[in-house]
Length: 184
Length: 184
DNA sequence: TACTCATGAGACATAGATGTCTCATTTGGT
DNA sequence: ACCAAATGAGACATCTATGTCTCATGAGTA
Image 1 (cartoon, rainbow over the protein chains, first blue to last red):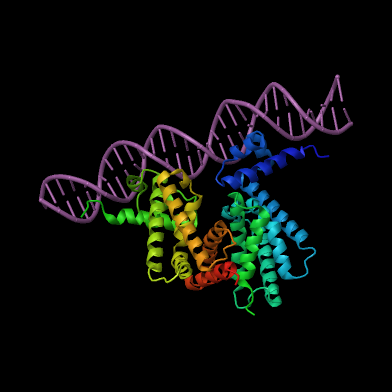
Image 2: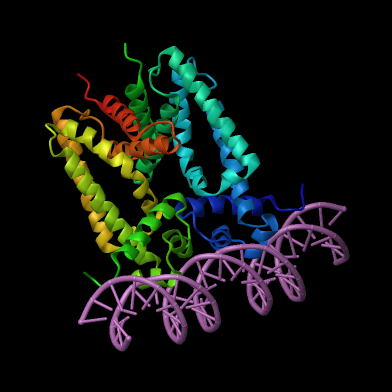
């Protein structure tokens, strides 16, 4: 077992997700306090704010990938895969969204990983089009944008207390699939 | 004619919209520079950041109201009104969105005005439900969330250069109306 | 021309966030 | 119990954004 208490680093990371999802401009002192950790200790694990954000981004992307992979393991079609992914992603949205406004596109590794997952999404959208799940006449870029923003909308609904994650994901799926369905 | 050059205040406001829509964390120095104005002059017109943000919020909301009112003047139904509003709002989204993450809910006047416009939107959604434009079984809160976030999605598509405002608004409208249409 | 007022430039003080360092204390493994 | 490593607390220096103030300049007006 490592000499570094695994608890401390994890506590900082979880506190950072909590604090930053409430206020992306929060200070590192806020994060340390929420984690119940000294500010100096935070700096021992993460040299500075960019490194912490980088770590959060990597974790968030890995979580997302894992959740989607698990959720879609038994999917029989791309359409079903999208539906299942939506249910898996909505509860994770609060851990993802605040990262969008951080200057992470400057980090080559993060930017590359993000681009790769976007490319995957575009590929899946196009496969779903071929299945007839989405209207082939609608631009893939729009479907991707609508998908991402309906996830955010669903999360917002959950956050406001108006729906459970399951209900919100169902509404988002209905809007997306019925709204962009291929015209028969 | 007022002794205060009307140009200066307007230049600051326009620069602020430009700069903050690119980076909401930009400094007042950045805004002053973009406006071609001394930093002290900016402070002469707006005591501090909150006051500037407040002014931007009021202007943005007024612009939005005016644009919607103009656009929907000739609408024959709530459904048509929503469609026309969407076309009017998408080009203004960049002047609206960054204000969401500013602590403006703390300002009573701004908060009240925002709440009022949200209530209007909810009323219109419910009227459109009665028309059959939206499925009465879908929560009004979801329709409002989807509407707002599809506006953002449309603006994102425009910003990426993948569509004109008109095309993006058309896609957003199609997604919303077809996705939430009442089941016949 | 003389006057008034907004402006630009820059000095100055302040506040908050950040990053480093030290030292006493605690923790976990031996 | 002993030891090495991690931690907490706090001092310290630095940096950036902010807000104020002063003074010279320029534009518009009488």
